[in-house]
Amino acid sequence: MTNRRVAVIGSGRIGRAWAIVFARAGFDVHLHDADLKMLDGALPAIEESVRDLDEFGLIDEPAAQIVARITPCASLADAVRDVELVQENIAEIVEAKRALFTELDRLTKPDTLLSSSTSGLPASTFTEGLHGRARCLVGHPVNPPSLVPLVELCGAPWTSAETLERARAIYDEAGQKAVTVNREIAGFLLNRIQGAVLDEALSLYAQGYASAADLDTVMRDGLAMRWSFMGPFETIDLNAPGGVADYADRYGGTYRSIAAARAPFDWSPETIAKLDAERRAVLDRDDIEKQSRWRDRRLMALLAHRRALAKKEES
Image (tube, rainbow, N blue to C red; front, side):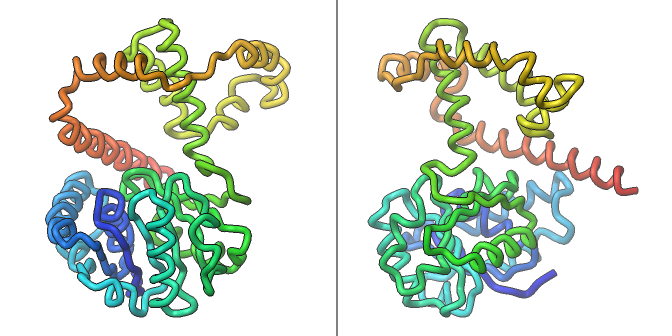
């Protein structure tokens, strides 16, 4: 375990989950939010989440010890003093991020890494004018990072190779699965892949090929069964006797014809309203928060299963 220190800025869902990620790995965490009411509510929410992790056997020490490593800080300066990494989680507004990173560049040590959880804004859009811009990067997680370990690392053109190497080592030490995006691209990797799947699902729904419930079944009980433990390239490599090249020979023409006939979804208000009505028929809007916790607990069960299998394979 480590006694190193990081700062998490923003105490919403993502920020609270990042605090758990680092504290669970032994880091001391300074948690800050400009909204003091949000900050006051952060620790109780974190305690509840850590208790859930304990219930599923996903932590290796008492929950109270993990929570004790997280210190709420009303002052931004206090939060980022003498930390090795700052994980920013504020709103997806480029001007707000630019203003915050300007402050972070001023308040932190010259070698502190400044990482943003942004899901779509390239680091170049809010770090260009900073004296320490070489230490800035995107560390894009999946919601919630305490349960889904992927983190995408993407620098701006001026981000140093050392910054990306150090960041990857820290995230790996925190138990995350870091991947490097080699150059800036809107949406990074995960959201572009997710966007492609979502675009086709919405397009099929808009054209009346299937209900929303049946399309969810296609993913949940079809593609996701394999994709929960292997990626698309490994999947197709195993889906033909001769591997990827054989798969391309067999099915490449089919996929080309599908791509040629695709109808991209235009996010029409009418279709979204129809989809929303279908979802509200099965899940009241007031129950979304409750169902989100159910989702998190299902993720915990999956993590527990994967952890048990890994231990079995090691023995």
